[in-house]
Length: 180
Image (cartoon, rainbow, N blue to C red):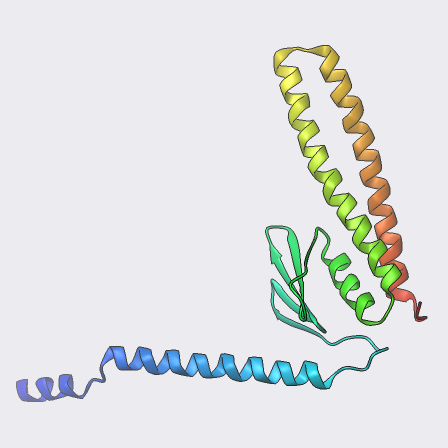
């Protein structure tokens, strides 16, 4: 019986060899997937139709020649043919920007990007003013409290307006069938 157990131990494949085989298989699958996606994107280039959208996982999308990556509520967009990187707060704004750019609706894409940038700037300003209001309340400085509260309300109103305008332009991009 002891001889049988010792022989079984010799038949076990080296763990390192198994890990290396698995890593090699994973590399092969990744390389094949990249090659197939490249061929698919290269073959699909009708200039006036909607680009191909491929979700790779929850945080990464390929939209024609653009890659979209989610990183802590910010969507980073990279164009395939240059190093230009854009940041978007709204996922739909990023998607429609990429679609509009590739369907030659550049004016609409730029409007969407402008409103998204303004929303991002206003969100940062809103957070800064919340902090200043808290500081003024702790220091019991009523003059600054009134000033920051007024600015905060103004910023919130502008933020609401920009979000509304962004939604309007996103709906326009979604339902518009004409080309600019």
